[in-house]
Image 1 (cartoon, rainbow, N blue to C red):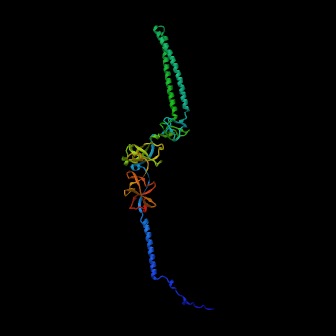
Image 2: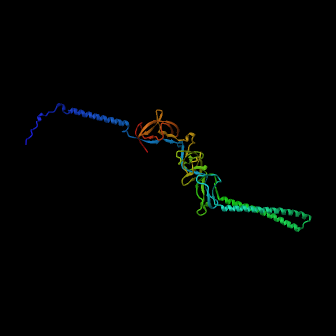
Image 3: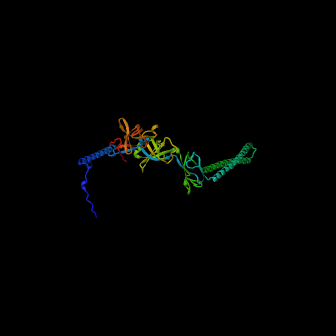
Length: 410
């Protein structure tokens, strides 16, 4: 085996242009690197500081802009209650019987005296017809008695004249006189029989009328409590009998009844202005007036019943609707019944004779100029600058600048 020849290392050389940086150049490079890094950090920090990222978020209370009624700022006291008809009746029958016909249903309007229902009354009709026939018989008997009396009167007067001249015996005169007196009694008895029969007809007519159930006043049928074929009796006296056929109410007598705490009764006065909000129509308000403060208190609840009368009754208002009532310090003006965009006065900032608010957008506040209008206490109308749904700063915990980050407090 042939051994390799040893390498000739003497021929290796380092070219002068390919040598590494000197220590001085190395130090200079590291210095430039640190300067560039520090400059970048400073620039980034400046940008973050300018954008507010590094600044702590300012805690604020907010208010959502939306429609506000002027009455809200004029309210002295709030109370809840229900719509109640002041004229309401459970209509029943005076007679006991089987319901033959029901002429109404829920929601139908009826006039006073209109027939609502009818009981089976064929027997009552027959009784009335019998009484009417009996009246005809009695009247015929009265006419016969009157004719007999007329004839007996003529005979009596003639016999009386002849007796005075002696042409008639006492016996004949006595017979004529007796006939006359009998005719008078018969005529009177026949007249009494007519009166009695007429009274019988009136009784039969009343009993027949009791089979018709009529509306006691003009109103609307609220509920139907009985159906055809069911037994109807006064006060439900019979077993399984219905006491009331229908329930009706006069919708023109609707009022709102609320309970006012005794401690707040001083804020309520008869004739004072009020406003009613129905849960069924939350976006509407109905003007009202305090009609009555019932002169007694509820001992268990320490409240006093107060009745409010609608200034303009709406057909949509129905009995037993749930309501909220606001007692106002003054009547509303004509232009104060509709809602307007309004915010609390303390949310408005004065800036160089202009008014502005802080609106929250994407977690930051932006100062927005606004134009204000009417004032109701601490509530201010906004004519321009804000829209419904905007979120504004209601109360600042610390000073804040335009563009600052905020933390919303509950």
